[in-house]
Length: 463
Image (cartoon, rainbow, N blue to C red; front, side, top):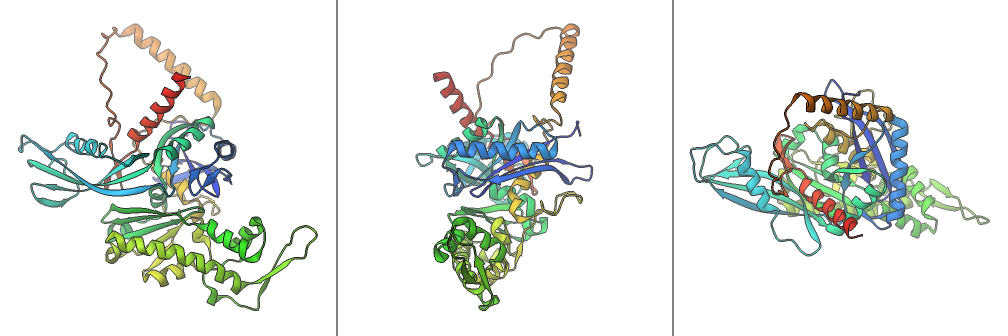
Protein backbone atom coordinates (compact mmCIF):
# COMPACT_ATOMS: atom_id res chain seq x y z
CA UNK A 1 0.00 0.00 0.00
CA UNK A 2 2.94 2.31 0.64
CA UNK A 3 3.61 2.65 -3.09
CA UNK A 4 -0.02 3.24 -4.01
CA UNK A 5 -1.75 6.55 -4.36
CA UNK A 6 -4.01 7.17 -1.38
CA UNK A 7 -6.91 9.51 -2.13
CA UNK A 8 -9.17 11.31 0.33
CA UNK A 9 -12.48 12.87 -0.68
CA UNK A 10 -14.37 15.41 1.43
CA UNK A 11 -18.10 15.92 0.88
CA UNK A 12 -19.26 19.09 2.67
CA UNK A 13 -23.03 18.77 2.59
CA UNK A 14 -25.99 20.49 4.21
CA UNK A 15 -26.95 17.60 6.50
CA UNK A 16 -23.66 15.69 6.78
CA UNK A 17 -19.93 16.03 6.20
CA UNK A 18 -18.24 12.85 5.02
CA UNK A 19 -14.63 11.92 4.40
CA UNK A 20 -13.64 8.82 2.42
CA UNK A 21 -10.17 7.33 1.94
CA UNK A 22 -9.37 4.86 -0.82
CA UNK A 23 -6.87 3.38 -3.27
CA UNK A 24 -7.12 1.66 -6.64
CA UNK A 25 -6.53 -2.09 -6.40
CA UNK A 26 -4.81 -4.38 -8.92
CA UNK A 27 -8.13 -5.01 -10.70
CA UNK A 28 -8.71 -1.32 -11.37
CA UNK A 29 -11.43 -1.08 -8.74
CA UNK A 30 -11.39 1.42 -5.88
CA UNK A 31 -10.96 0.03 -2.39
CA UNK A 32 -12.39 2.19 0.38
CA UNK A 33 -9.97 1.99 3.31
CA UNK A 34 -12.19 3.87 5.72
CA UNK A 35 -14.63 6.72 6.10
CA UNK A 36 -16.08 9.12 8.62
CA UNK A 37 -19.45 10.89 8.56
CA UNK A 38 -20.82 13.43 11.04
CA UNK A 39 -23.76 15.88 11.10
CA UNK A 40 -23.09 19.14 9.27
CA UNK A 41 -23.76 22.04 11.61
CA UNK A 42 -22.54 25.06 9.67
CA UNK A 43 -23.76 24.58 6.09
CA UNK A 44 -27.04 25.79 4.59
CA UNK A 45 -28.09 24.74 1.07
CA UNK A 46 -24.56 23.75 0.20
CA UNK A 47 -23.03 27.08 1.31
CA UNK A 48 -20.96 27.63 4.47
CA UNK A 49 -22.98 29.69 6.94
CA UNK A 50 -20.80 29.21 10.04
CA UNK A 51 -17.03 28.85 9.66
CA UNK A 52 -16.34 27.54 13.19
CA UNK A 53 -19.05 24.87 13.15
CA UNK A 54 -18.07 23.71 9.67
CA UNK A 55 -14.39 23.43 10.61
CA UNK A 56 -15.28 21.37 13.68
CA UNK A 57 -17.46 19.02 11.63
CA UNK A 58 -14.70 18.59 9.02
CA UNK A 59 -12.16 17.78 11.73
CA UNK A 60 -14.48 15.21 13.29
CA UNK A 61 -15.22 13.51 9.96
CA UNK A 62 -11.53 13.41 9.02
CA UNK A 63 -10.55 12.06 12.45
CA UNK A 64 -13.06 9.22 12.06
CA UNK A 65 -11.79 8.46 8.55
CA UNK A 66 -8.19 8.40 9.82
CA UNK A 67 -9.12 6.10 12.67
CA UNK A 68 -11.02 3.68 10.44
CA UNK A 69 -8.45 3.64 7.63
CA UNK A 70 -5.14 4.00 9.45
CA UNK A 71 -4.20 6.80 7.04
CA UNK A 72 -2.86 10.23 7.99
CA UNK A 73 -4.97 12.55 5.84
CA UNK A 74 -3.18 15.71 4.73
CA UNK A 75 -4.88 16.64 1.47
CA UNK A 76 -8.39 16.14 0.11
CA UNK A 77 -10.50 16.39 -3.02
CA UNK A 78 -13.34 18.70 -2.02
CA UNK A 79 -16.84 18.71 -3.46
CA UNK A 80 -18.48 22.03 -4.22
CA UNK A 81 -22.21 22.58 -4.66
CA UNK A 82 -24.93 25.05 -3.76
CA UNK A 83 -27.55 27.10 -5.56
CA UNK A 84 -24.85 29.60 -6.57
CA UNK A 85 -23.47 27.07 -9.08
CA UNK A 86 -24.45 27.94 -12.66
CA UNK A 87 -23.51 26.76 -16.13
CA UNK A 88 -23.25 28.29 -19.59
CA UNK A 89 -22.49 27.16 -23.12
CA UNK A 90 -19.85 29.07 -25.09
CA UNK A 91 -17.70 28.68 -28.18
CA UNK A 92 -14.14 29.60 -29.09
CA UNK A 93 -12.10 29.40 -32.27
CA UNK A 94 -8.47 29.39 -33.39
CA UNK A 95 -7.14 30.34 -36.84
CA UNK A 96 -4.07 28.22 -37.55
CA UNK A 97 -1.40 29.65 -39.86
CA UNK A 98 -0.22 26.30 -41.17
CA UNK A 99 -3.12 24.01 -41.97
CA UNK A 100 -0.74 21.18 -42.92
CA UNK A 101 0.53 20.75 -39.36
CA UNK A 102 -1.38 18.60 -36.89
CA UNK A 103 -3.69 20.14 -34.34
CA UNK A 104 -1.97 19.90 -30.96
CA UNK A 105 -2.93 20.18 -27.33
CA UNK A 106 -1.61 23.76 -27.33
CA UNK A 107 -4.35 24.70 -29.82
CA UNK A 108 -6.96 23.26 -27.46
CA UNK A 109 -5.43 25.00 -24.45
CA UNK A 110 -5.46 28.30 -26.34
CA UNK A 111 -9.24 28.09 -26.68
CA UNK A 112 -9.63 26.98 -23.08
CA UNK A 113 -7.61 29.97 -21.89
CA UNK A 114 -9.91 32.25 -23.85
CA UNK A 115 -12.90 30.72 -22.03
CA UNK A 116 -11.41 31.71 -18.68
CA UNK A 117 -11.36 35.31 -19.91
CA UNK A 118 -15.12 35.43 -20.54
CA UNK A 119 -16.71 38.27 -18.57
CA UNK A 120 -18.60 37.09 -15.50
CA UNK A 121 -21.14 38.79 -13.27
CA UNK A 122 -19.68 40.54 -10.21
CA UNK A 123 -18.86 38.03 -7.48
CA UNK A 124 -18.80 35.07 -9.87
CA UNK A 125 -15.83 33.12 -11.16
CA UNK A 126 -15.27 30.22 -13.54
CA UNK A 127 -14.82 26.94 -11.67
CA UNK A 128 -14.35 24.61 -14.61
CA UNK A 129 -14.29 24.59 -18.42
CA UNK A 130 -15.42 21.32 -19.99
CA UNK A 131 -14.80 20.71 -23.71
CA UNK A 132 -17.67 19.14 -25.60
CA UNK A 133 -17.28 18.96 -29.38
CA UNK A 134 -15.08 20.55 -32.03
CA UNK A 135 -15.46 21.76 -35.61
CA UNK A 136 -12.56 21.75 -38.09
CA UNK A 137 -13.01 23.75 -41.31
CA UNK A 138 -16.78 23.33 -41.11
CA UNK A 139 -16.69 19.63 -40.24
CA UNK A 140 -18.61 19.39 -36.95
CA UNK A 141 -19.19 16.79 -34.20
CA UNK A 142 -15.48 16.00 -33.77
CA UNK A 143 -14.62 14.76 -30.28
CA UNK A 144 -10.85 14.28 -30.55
CA UNK A 145 -9.28 16.93 -32.81
CA UNK A 146 -5.67 16.37 -31.73
CA UNK A 147 -3.69 14.90 -34.64
CA UNK A 148 -6.08 16.15 -37.31
CA UNK A 149 -5.34 18.95 -39.79
CA UNK A 150 -7.15 22.15 -40.66
CA UNK A 151 -6.92 25.92 -40.62
CA UNK A 152 -9.93 26.87 -38.49
CA UNK A 153 -10.58 25.05 -35.22
CA UNK A 154 -13.76 25.78 -33.25
CA UNK A 155 -14.80 24.33 -29.90
CA UNK A 156 -17.98 24.15 -27.85
CA UNK A 157 -17.44 24.43 -24.10
CA UNK A 158 -19.54 23.94 -20.99
CA UNK A 159 -18.57 26.59 -18.44
CA UNK A 160 -19.38 26.05 -14.78
CA UNK A 161 -19.33 29.12 -12.54
CA UNK A 162 -19.79 29.72 -8.85
CA UNK A 163 -19.89 32.43 -6.24
CA UNK A 164 -16.32 33.43 -5.41
CA UNK A 165 -17.06 34.09 -1.74
CA UNK A 166 -18.76 30.70 -1.31
CA UNK A 167 -15.74 28.92 -2.78
CA UNK A 168 -13.35 30.95 -0.61
CA UNK A 169 -15.31 30.00 2.51
CA UNK A 170 -15.09 26.29 1.66
CA UNK A 171 -11.36 26.64 1.04
CA UNK A 172 -10.91 28.54 4.29
CA UNK A 173 -12.76 25.89 6.31
CA UNK A 174 -10.66 23.06 4.89
CA UNK A 175 -7.43 24.97 5.55
CA UNK A 176 -8.50 25.81 9.11
CA UNK A 177 -9.16 22.10 9.62
CA UNK A 178 -5.46 21.50 8.88
CA UNK A 179 -5.85 20.09 5.37
CA UNK A 180 -4.66 20.99 1.89
CA UNK A 181 -7.19 21.35 -0.94
CA UNK A 182 -6.06 19.26 -3.92
CA UNK A 183 -9.00 20.20 -6.10
CA UNK A 184 -12.51 21.63 -5.99
CA UNK A 185 -14.90 19.32 -7.87
CA UNK A 186 -18.52 19.87 -8.80
CA UNK A 187 -20.44 17.38 -6.66
CA UNK A 188 -22.78 16.25 -9.42
CA UNK A 189 -19.73 15.21 -11.49
CA UNK A 190 -18.33 13.25 -8.55
CA UNK A 191 -21.65 11.46 -8.07
CA UNK A 192 -21.75 10.67 -11.80
CA UNK A 193 -18.37 8.93 -11.55
CA UNK A 194 -19.73 6.78 -8.73
CA UNK A 195 -23.14 5.66 -10.01
CA UNK A 196 -23.39 5.94 -13.81
CA UNK A 197 -22.61 3.18 -16.29
CA UNK A 198 -20.67 3.82 -19.50
CA UNK A 199 -23.55 2.75 -21.74
CA UNK A 200 -25.84 5.23 -19.98
CA UNK A 201 -23.40 8.05 -20.65
CA UNK A 202 -23.35 7.13 -24.32
CA UNK A 203 -27.11 6.67 -24.66
CA UNK A 204 -28.04 9.81 -22.72
CA UNK A 205 -28.89 10.02 -19.02
CA UNK A 206 -29.92 12.58 -16.41
CA UNK A 207 -28.25 12.25 -13.02
CA UNK A 208 -30.33 13.63 -10.14
CA UNK A 209 -28.52 13.94 -6.80
CA UNK A 210 -31.06 14.80 -4.07
CA UNK A 211 -29.09 16.19 -1.16
CA UNK A 212 -30.15 17.81 2.08
CA UNK A 213 -30.21 21.44 0.93
CA UNK A 214 -30.09 21.24 -2.87
CA UNK A 215 -30.77 18.85 -5.74
CA UNK A 216 -28.09 18.65 -8.44
CA UNK A 217 -28.77 17.76 -12.06
CA UNK A 218 -26.22 16.67 -14.67
CA UNK A 219 -27.26 15.61 -18.17
CA UNK A 220 -24.95 13.47 -20.32
CA UNK A 221 -25.28 12.49 -23.97
CA UNK A 222 -22.74 10.70 -26.17
CA UNK A 223 -20.26 10.66 -23.26
CA UNK A 224 -20.37 14.45 -22.98
CA UNK A 225 -21.67 16.60 -20.14
CA UNK A 226 -24.39 18.68 -21.80
CA UNK A 227 -26.20 20.49 -19.00
CA UNK A 228 -25.91 21.12 -15.26
CA UNK A 229 -28.28 22.79 -12.82
CA UNK A 230 -28.81 23.18 -9.09
CA UNK A 231 -32.34 23.17 -7.63
CA UNK A 232 -32.50 25.03 -4.27
CA UNK A 233 -34.61 22.29 -2.69
CA UNK A 234 -33.62 19.04 -1.02
CA UNK A 235 -34.47 16.62 1.74
CA UNK A 236 -34.48 19.32 4.41
CA UNK A 237 -37.64 20.95 3.08
CA UNK A 238 -39.41 17.61 3.51
CA UNK A 239 -38.18 17.37 7.10
CA UNK A 240 -39.28 20.95 7.80
CA UNK A 241 -42.74 20.30 6.35
CA UNK A 242 -43.17 17.19 8.52
CA UNK A 243 -42.00 19.19 11.52
CA UNK A 244 -44.48 22.02 10.92
CA UNK A 245 -47.41 19.80 9.93
CA UNK A 246 -47.07 17.46 12.90
CA UNK A 247 -45.93 20.05 15.45
CA UNK A 248 -42.85 18.05 16.46
CA UNK A 249 -39.14 18.76 16.81
CA UNK A 250 -36.78 18.42 13.85
CA UNK A 251 -35.03 15.34 15.22
CA UNK A 252 -38.29 13.39 15.36
CA UNK A 253 -39.36 14.68 11.94
CA UNK A 254 -36.12 13.44 10.36
CA UNK A 255 -36.50 10.08 12.07
CA UNK A 256 -40.09 9.77 10.80
CA UNK A 257 -38.97 10.53 7.24
CA UNK A 258 -36.16 7.98 7.27
CA UNK A 259 -37.96 5.13 9.02
CA UNK A 260 -41.52 5.43 7.76
CA UNK A 261 -41.42 7.93 4.87
CA UNK A 262 -42.84 7.22 1.42
CA UNK A 263 -43.11 9.32 -1.73
CA UNK A 264 -46.45 7.83 -2.82
CA UNK A 265 -49.42 8.30 -0.51
CA UNK A 266 -51.64 5.86 -2.43
CA UNK A 267 -49.34 2.97 -1.53
CA UNK A 268 -49.76 3.57 2.21
CA UNK A 269 -52.58 2.65 4.56
CA UNK A 270 -54.62 5.18 6.49
CA UNK A 271 -55.33 2.81 9.37
CA UNK A 272 -51.65 2.31 10.27
CA UNK A 273 -50.70 4.91 12.87
CA UNK A 274 -47.25 5.93 14.11
CA UNK A 275 -46.68 7.25 17.62
CA UNK A 276 -44.31 10.20 17.93
CA UNK A 277 -42.67 10.94 21.30
CA UNK A 278 -43.89 14.23 22.76
CA UNK A 279 -41.85 16.82 24.60
CA UNK A 280 -40.94 16.03 28.18
CA UNK A 281 -44.07 15.81 30.31
CA UNK A 282 -46.41 15.82 27.30
CA UNK A 283 -48.38 13.13 25.53
CA UNK A 284 -47.10 11.41 22.37
CA UNK A 285 -48.57 12.49 19.03
CA UNK A 286 -49.90 10.22 16.31
CA UNK A 287 -49.89 10.32 12.52
CA UNK A 288 -51.02 7.79 9.94
CA UNK A 289 -48.62 6.43 7.34
CA UNK A 290 -50.80 7.81 4.56
CA UNK A 291 -50.87 11.32 6.02
CA UNK A 292 -47.08 11.25 6.43
CA UNK A 293 -46.70 10.08 2.82
CA UNK A 294 -48.97 12.89 1.59
CA UNK A 295 -46.70 15.47 3.24
CA UNK A 296 -43.61 13.90 1.69
CA UNK A 297 -45.16 13.40 -1.74
CA UNK A 298 -46.15 17.06 -1.99
CA UNK A 299 -42.59 18.27 -1.47
CA UNK A 300 -41.00 15.54 -3.55
CA UNK A 301 -43.30 16.36 -6.45
CA UNK A 302 -42.05 19.95 -6.28
CA UNK A 303 -38.42 18.78 -6.53
CA UNK A 304 -39.10 16.41 -9.42
CA UNK A 305 -41.19 19.02 -11.26
CA UNK A 306 -38.24 21.44 -11.06
CA UNK A 307 -35.90 18.74 -12.37
CA UNK A 308 -38.31 17.91 -15.19
CA UNK A 309 -38.44 21.59 -16.16
CA UNK A 310 -34.63 21.72 -16.35
CA UNK A 311 -34.53 18.56 -18.46
CA UNK A 312 -37.01 20.05 -20.92
CA UNK A 313 -35.13 23.37 -20.99
CA UNK A 314 -31.84 21.62 -21.76
CA UNK A 315 -33.03 20.46 -25.18
CA UNK A 316 -32.15 16.83 -24.40
CA UNK A 317 -35.54 15.67 -23.14
CA UNK A 318 -36.02 13.27 -26.08
CA UNK A 319 -32.39 12.09 -26.13
CA UNK A 320 -32.22 10.46 -22.71
CA UNK A 321 -32.42 6.81 -23.68
CA UNK A 322 -30.81 5.93 -20.36
CA UNK A 323 -33.56 7.78 -18.51
CA UNK A 324 -32.97 9.18 -15.03
CA UNK A 325 -30.66 7.98 -12.26
CA UNK A 326 -31.50 9.25 -8.76
CA UNK A 327 -28.85 9.22 -6.05
CA UNK A 328 -28.03 11.09 -2.84
CA UNK A 329 -29.78 10.85 0.52
CA UNK A 330 -33.17 11.65 -1.01
CA UNK A 331 -32.92 8.55 -3.20
CA UNK A 332 -33.33 6.40 -0.10
CA UNK A 333 -36.96 7.48 0.38
CA UNK A 334 -39.36 4.68 -0.47
CA UNK A 335 -41.15 4.93 -3.84
CA UNK A 336 -39.17 7.96 -5.06
CA UNK A 337 -38.19 5.95 -8.13
CA UNK A 338 -41.83 5.29 -9.03
CA UNK A 339 -42.85 8.92 -8.45
CA UNK A 340 -40.04 10.27 -10.63
CA UNK A 341 -40.87 7.81 -13.40
CA UNK A 342 -44.55 8.79 -13.27
CA UNK A 343 -43.92 12.56 -13.41
CA UNK A 344 -41.14 12.57 -16.02
CA UNK A 345 -42.42 9.60 -18.08
CA UNK A 346 -38.86 8.27 -18.19
CA UNK A 347 -37.23 5.06 -17.11
CA UNK A 348 -35.76 5.66 -13.64
CA UNK A 349 -33.43 3.77 -11.36
CA UNK A 350 -31.71 4.41 -8.04
CA UNK A 351 -27.96 5.00 -8.35
CA UNK A 352 -25.79 2.98 -5.98
CA UNK A 353 -22.03 3.69 -5.90
CA UNK A 354 -20.97 0.07 -6.34
CA UNK A 355 -19.94 -0.16 -10.01
CA UNK A 356 -16.33 0.94 -9.48
CA UNK A 357 -15.81 -0.32 -5.92
CA UNK A 358 -13.92 -3.45 -4.89
CA UNK A 359 -16.06 -6.49 -4.10
CA UNK A 360 -15.08 -6.51 -0.42
CA UNK A 361 -16.53 -3.02 0.16
CA UNK A 362 -19.04 -3.14 3.06
CA UNK A 363 -22.69 -2.84 2.02
CA UNK A 364 -23.32 0.04 4.44
CA UNK A 365 -20.92 2.19 2.40
CA UNK A 366 -22.42 1.35 -1.01
CA UNK A 367 -25.45 3.57 -0.46
CA UNK A 368 -26.77 6.53 -2.52
CA UNK A 369 -26.18 8.71 0.53
CA UNK A 370 -22.40 8.43 -0.01
CA UNK A 371 -22.29 8.73 -3.81
CA UNK A 372 -20.51 12.11 -3.83
CA UNK A 373 -17.81 11.20 -1.29
CA UNK A 374 -17.06 7.91 -3.04
CA UNK A 375 -17.08 9.65 -6.43
CA UNK A 376 -14.43 12.11 -5.23
CA UNK A 377 -12.17 9.19 -4.31
CA UNK A 378 -12.84 7.45 -7.64
CA UNK A 379 -11.93 10.60 -9.58
CA UNK A 380 -8.70 11.00 -7.63
CA UNK A 381 -7.75 7.33 -7.91
CA UNK A 382 -8.21 7.41 -11.69
CA UNK A 383 -5.84 10.34 -12.19
CA UNK A 384 -2.45 9.63 -13.74
CA UNK A 385 -0.64 11.70 -11.12
CA UNK A 386 0.64 9.36 -8.40
CA UNK A 387 1.75 12.00 -5.91
CA UNK A 388 -0.12 12.15 -2.62
CA UNK A 389 0.22 13.85 0.73
CA UNK A 390 -1.71 11.11 2.54
CA UNK A 391 0.38 8.39 4.23
CA UNK A 392 -0.34 5.07 5.90
CA UNK A 393 1.58 5.92 9.07
CA UNK A 394 3.20 9.01 10.54
CA UNK A 395 6.71 7.53 10.64
CA UNK A 396 6.60 6.78 6.89
CA UNK A 397 6.46 10.50 6.14
CA UNK A 398 9.60 11.09 8.19
CA UNK A 399 11.44 8.17 6.56
CA UNK A 400 10.47 9.37 3.07
CA UNK A 401 11.77 12.86 3.84
CA UNK A 402 15.06 11.43 5.11
CA UNK A 403 15.49 9.29 2.00
CA UNK A 404 14.73 12.27 -0.23
CA UNK A 405 17.32 14.40 1.58
CA UNK A 406 19.94 11.65 1.26
CA UNK A 407 19.26 11.17 -2.45
CA UNK A 408 19.51 14.91 -3.05
CA UNK A 409 22.85 15.05 -1.22
CA UNK A 410 24.27 12.24 -3.36
CA UNK A 411 22.92 13.88 -6.53
CA UNK A 412 24.58 17.18 -5.67
CA UNK A 413 27.91 15.40 -5.18
CA UNK A 414 27.95 13.55 -8.51
CA UNK A 415 26.16 16.04 -10.77
CA UNK A 416 27.44 19.50 -11.73
CA UNK A 417 25.34 22.42 -10.63
CA UNK A 418 23.18 23.76 -13.46
CA UNK A 419 23.15 27.48 -14.18
CA UNK A 420 20.23 29.39 -12.77
CA UNK A 421 17.41 29.49 -15.25
CA UNK A 422 15.41 32.56 -16.03
CA UNK A 423 12.20 32.61 -14.06
CA UNK A 424 9.20 31.93 -16.26
CA UNK A 425 6.24 34.25 -16.33
CA UNK A 426 3.31 32.78 -14.37
CA UNK A 427 0.60 31.19 -16.52
CA UNK A 428 -2.77 31.05 -14.72
CA UNK A 429 -3.90 28.14 -16.91
CA UNK A 430 -0.67 26.13 -16.95
CA UNK A 431 -2.09 23.27 -14.85
CA UNK A 432 -5.36 23.10 -16.78
CA UNK A 433 -4.21 19.89 -18.35
CA UNK A 434 -6.59 17.73 -20.30
CA UNK A 435 -7.62 14.68 -18.25
CA UNK A 436 -9.34 11.55 -19.54
CA UNK A 437 -12.86 11.18 -18.20
CA UNK A 438 -15.70 9.02 -19.52
CA UNK A 439 -14.00 8.97 -22.92
CA UNK A 440 -13.96 12.77 -23.06
CA UNK A 441 -11.42 15.45 -22.21
CA UNK A 442 -12.22 17.48 -19.11
CA UNK A 443 -10.43 20.49 -17.69
CA UNK A 444 -9.72 20.46 -13.98
CA UNK A 445 -10.15 23.39 -11.62
CA UNK A 446 -6.47 24.21 -11.01
CA UNK A 447 -6.71 27.80 -12.25
CA UNK A 448 -9.72 28.57 -10.06
CA UNK A 449 -8.15 26.91 -7.02
CA UNK A 450 -4.86 28.74 -7.55
CA UNK A 451 -6.70 32.05 -7.67
CA UNK A 452 -8.24 31.31 -4.26
CA UNK A 453 -4.89 30.19 -2.84
CA UNK A 454 -3.24 33.40 -4.05
CA UNK A 455 -5.98 35.45 -2.42
CA UNK A 456 -5.35 33.94 1.02
CA UNK A 457 -1.58 34.18 0.60
CA UNK A 458 -1.94 37.91 -0.12
CA UNK A 459 -4.17 38.30 2.96
CA UNK A 460 -1.55 36.58 5.15
CA UNK A 461 1.19 38.87 3.82
CA UNK A 462 -0.91 41.96 4.61
CA UNK A 463 -1.31 40.77 8.19
